[in-house]
Length: 170
Length: 339
Image 1 (cartoon, one colour):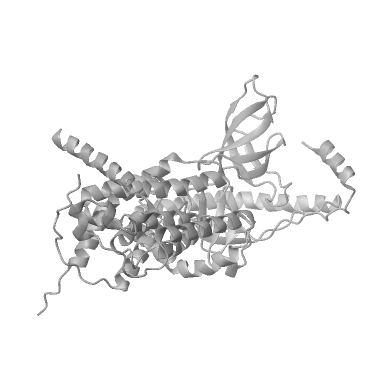
Image 2: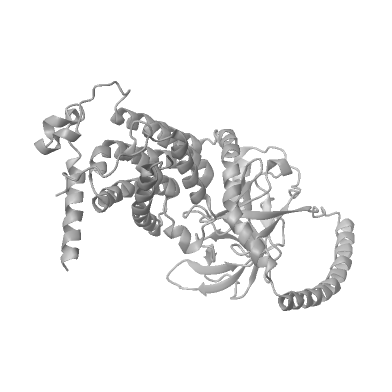
């Protein structure tokens, strides 16, 4: 079972809104890079991973409403159906907010399993909507779910270490 | 071996915990009531009012999204909203194209002189042959115009061409679309035809202020009315969903079509100008067990190759719409005139 007695390793610095907004804009930017061919198939959903990180680690500041708004922006960005990303990100945020306490308690490996299930749900919803509207399905699309899960590890460690940076200028 | 077993165990425990999260609703109000004693210190009661519960928010936003999707898919009321939001997103989109542009510039800068010379020579040669053909073509055009004038046929309308650069391609894994850097500020309209120097590439389907979206002819179920250049046989080419294929559906087994035939636009839809190359027939499967032949074609235009495209700016002129005739007569003419 999960290692519940794990001590809190560091006291984190208070989080600025600028950092959150910058990370989301960065993720939208990375999603918007001109990916093509096999790289498009393997492209992780940066926005989903970043939103999931904030929903699990700051559920009171980044929640379902903001994820929905970011989803609408992604819809415009990707020229997909209005509400398609929004719906999947809403479910993603719900999963993140509801499981936030547990996920924060786990170490990285255990987190990854949980995150995979949330992301799989998100990808499935997006794919289902697409299937309903267009009547076809690209199964290779779900590869992105795996890479997104793998992306969770570096993203989570990066954000965690950025939040832990101490000001040593005395 | 050991680490594999440990990994398996962690996966199993993760899955188990995931389903464990589907607890009764009052779990969220009184978490300590349900949790093991050792987790007491990490859990808190909900003392402060935090607005609606996550489940309520989920339902609200999910219903909102579904409503938006329904309206967008059915009625297309949201195009103005989309273009307003695209203004917000477009600086980021432009920024995202920057790495690609920089890479292109860098590789343009470090091109070798010999490559340039070779390219220059090849272009010169091409230019000479083209000039010869162009002179010929102009004389043919004049002759054709005269003949058409004589027979009082409607002249084919002239097209003015706008050049556009692809800003990015196929961003959505499900769809074959490219975005080009000309939009409504450049008087682009939805429905205009996009081609490269060899053939038809697609059609503009959505216009933003500075960008427009081109649906490629290889998009699944995108139809182009075509004609076999050799025999004049009319048909419709459908996209197959990947960038290298088109297919002709509902062609009888006995149809006069051969491998290598060039398909050009027939122009009878009034949207695609007639005579533009679309595809080349690659494979024909004639099986007497099926009523239709299976015909696979490959697009002639570089559907997924080039950076620069041409937009044909004038819509072809359609003949005057005939006077409204009674519905019964119209149905009859459609039945007899059907192909």
